[in-house]
Length: 408
Image 1 (cartoon, rainbow, N blue to C red):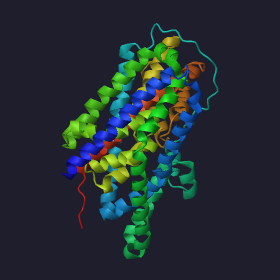
Image 2 (tube, one colour):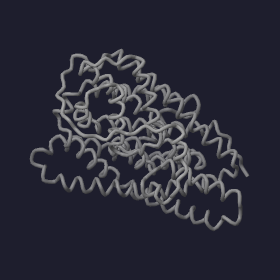
Image 3 (tube, rainbow, N blue to C red):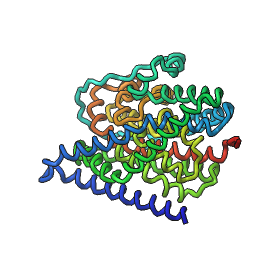
């Protein structure tokens, strides 16, 4: 009976969010007319909604991870969960990179397309060595990591604190109880925010559609359609297969339960802001907190399958449109570079712009394409974020079967 209620509640939330998404798109298309005056109000509500979700990201991630480590009760099992998460994400990212290298070239994306370029100054993401990336994992100032939104450093700090609490036992119980309380408070606040998610998504997507306009969407419709078809096929085949074959979970049930997180990610373009909702969906799927508290935040930071697909599509599209020859070898270099750039990149709207600027420079594309890319970045990023969030949840469901939790 309880399970039926959960499914019904999940369905109602999904329906409400989907309705908000569709109505937001329609409203954004027609807003340039008589409704343009309400744009400031729409943007205000969108900002309030996003802030309400972001407010709980780091308290939830930090405290949930510490509580999860205590529940695991073993340092070795904690290590296995982290290692398996990384292996899952690396495996799917490698497959996405291969798909991104060959598919857009086979489709001839951008051939015969004429684009008008404009100069836009964008600061490209700087490449760092692998040693620098590893060195920056441990925060010299944990409070700065929280304030700057550095998810990887927050994760590492939480793991260090969690393992230390585990090792000293009873002396850490007061702190662990505080974390348990904060975790419960965070979950409760997210539950309340869920009731207004449909309104938040409505306002977020309306602003996006209005800002881009129908002309931009139609002009670049071919590449957008091809990109979204690829996203959908990738989600169904790779993530659906992972859930069915490894997680032994019904694919239909999985997508029905995770749809609120997917739609929220689509509407907000933020995997980090979707974390609280993803955690709730993982709970409904029966994923233990010990797994979801580590796998989901880690996935929001390092799982960039859809970004690999997006970047390769855009590089090939603009290269063909501008008459620039990008060899297969260069595409492989671009994809390897994109993998390095994606590690630790905040899962926030617009995070891909700086990365694309760096990759376009490597591929030898003219700087003028940035103005065109920026105009459609959000439209591309919506699908990519949705895809990545589904990948995080698929990983968590699969690990429910592959991680043997030691019961005390």
